[in-house]
Length: 455
Image (tube, rainbow, N blue to C red; front, side, top):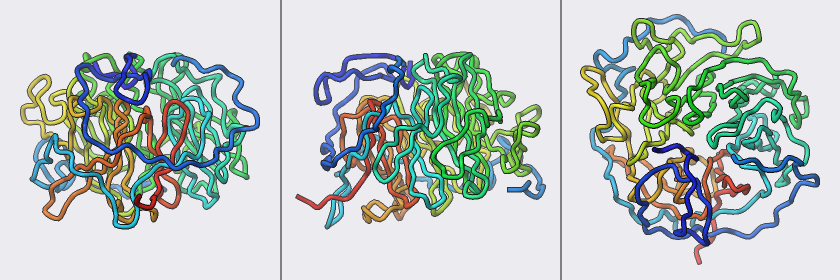
């Protein structure tokens, strides 16, 4: 079983005896990796901490012919990809530059199970952090503001370890419209994607401004996905897990009449309570009876995915079952892939025969025995603090605290490099407006990835 936060175990491999949420079964190997250098900094705590006690857990596109999926590879169903398969189990030396090395700087603490961090794209410099119980907090000039941006604790269900308020995405025209969208678990277990309107100062939003964009029933309390991202095309992408339990017992990921186990793509540029979304005319066609919102299929639990802000390429980190975690790559504007679950877990056969269905391999996988058990997707680094890291996809593992950099080299092969090991439960990565990256520890702290002088 590989629920992301599904099983509590005592793990003594990290500093101290830390209570971790193990998302796998089987041993976790110690991979050689330098320990993250943490730069000391003063952290401003909110004047009034939360009173609730912690709980256990653009316009429509021009119509075009919709490509047929799963018949023959073409520009949509089989994006160009290197034929060289990534080397599994190889962990090269940590990435450094001649002048600086990657380090972490704590910028905030005292959050309640942070799940995501992002910006509004309006030049304000504000950072927004979702907390699992249902609040969105604001970081301004390094200070965690006491007043939440949004409080949805009256409608968010977070009894399951993978439930709660899971992400937030700001409309590309937020500076004008003040609209944003969140993904949360309702008290009855449904996945809800809703829109809201922020106050003009961007520091608060009225919970009563909500309108529901999508409500998707969930048969189990895990594998909810939860990520929202606006793509370079202005469309809203929604990552959906396979519905939960173990092994996708109802085969939702390969059922094209279901939204579970999919990447969805919808147009919310004119979203309202009367017309929550439109389906882009150039979404791929997955066959008779398929839901038109589907952009890609065959996913188990795409907890975190992101777009390269320079190329538009998408990286999807899909949490594995018992043995492998995987990273999938999708060239910009090329949907229609079937990433294989549950026919395959990573590159390995899992259950059933795909027959003539065209499956897209991940560009990288790592085995649980190599260190970790639940992949946490990140971002392609496009900041200024670490020049040697520019163009690398930075991601980590929730259980081991390892952080890696994945990049494609000149001959088309993908190379995975260890950046460092942390003692954190890495629940998410975040990106600010300048392209700098952040690491979220589910225990309440936020760290910024910075460049530190070599010792």
